[in-house]
Length: 304
Image 1: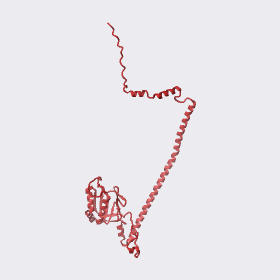
Image 2: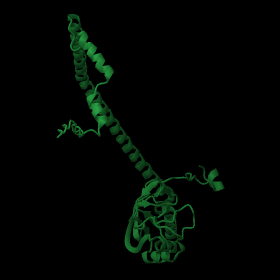
Image 3: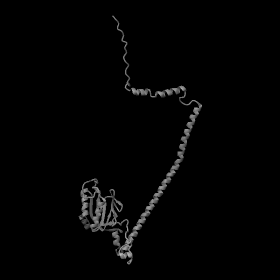
Image 4: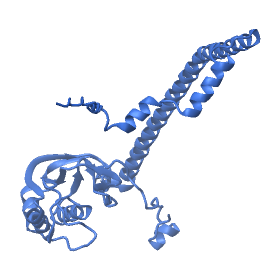
């Protein structure tokens, strides 16, 4: 009986768990490029790797370290010395700013005082040249504060100022929104004058025959002074008659149309007494009256 030959075959070795990551294994096993590795090996063979071995090299390294330390020390010392200088310059700049601000405030106060003086002189001039009618002239010119019965008209923008659509605004220069425009305020004021108002003020700004109501963006300006809604219009006159006449006028109907079309909020009420301040400044455009017999008086024309 023949003997069975032994099985000399061996089982294959197990696969490495990281066999699928051959690229990463290659990078980890050869982290240093071959050229760098050869250069490092040559330096180790020559004895030039690591710290310098000769006295000259050691002295050179020490000198370099001393120079580096000296540069760092000098930089720190210079920064320490210049810090008080920078702080002093900053304090001087702050002092200059404070001084200039104080000078500007002083000049502004002087300008306001001069304006008040000019306004007072203009009012006195109006009273003097008006003779017996001086008070009436000052009243019509807005030179004096007034009080008496009248009406209080409050106009405010709509809660939602982005509304659109048709409406009473026919001019393309005004957007159809729920904001009051300068043109709207002009019509309100003109309607009050036409209805019998003797004096008018908007948000404390007294109106005169030379007052201008304009716009700057969405803001309404009265004599170049911006107004903030709600707009409170006070008018001196017979309260009940003035309120009724204004509501029945074309401009009162225009305001009512704004309310219906754009939800602009309005309210009007007669008041037993309203107080209006004097106009902030007066502009005198006419010449001084001359004595009878002068050329200007004979021709009926003034001089400017």
